[in-house]
Image (cartoon, rainbow, N blue to C red; front, side):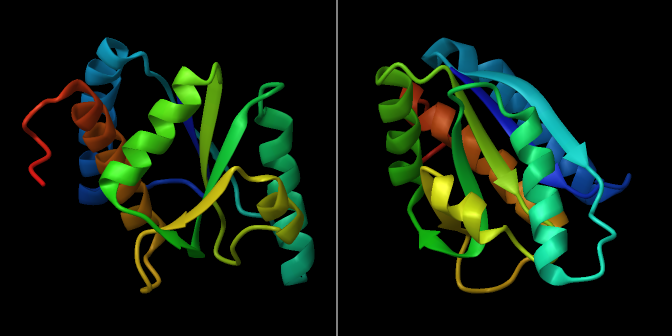
Length: 160
């Protein structure tokens, strides 16, 4: 199964980008052993629309145009469910084993995700009750994808 990341906004050079890239690279190298491919991160610019609702709609439409037919969508959102690393790994495995070919994790813009997009998502998750900068969310997602691959392979990186 291909697991891609879609992000609204560009990641600037710096320590956050280096750390995200390090974990995405680890995931790309460890994923194939458990049937997970990582084609990379697609970045789209933030909408310049005047209203929040219009910005969310435009950003959601940009994501929809990039989704492969039949792709499964997981949104990262502060209002999402807080799930454990093991639960995320199990969700990924269940989708993979259920014949899903493509999974996209989407990080929204500063205003969050469009409600209509949330309604189509397989899952909406949060990395806790706090609001995180998008750069750190990308780092945390990269690490959790790598962690999921290690959990699924039985690698000792994850020690529960």
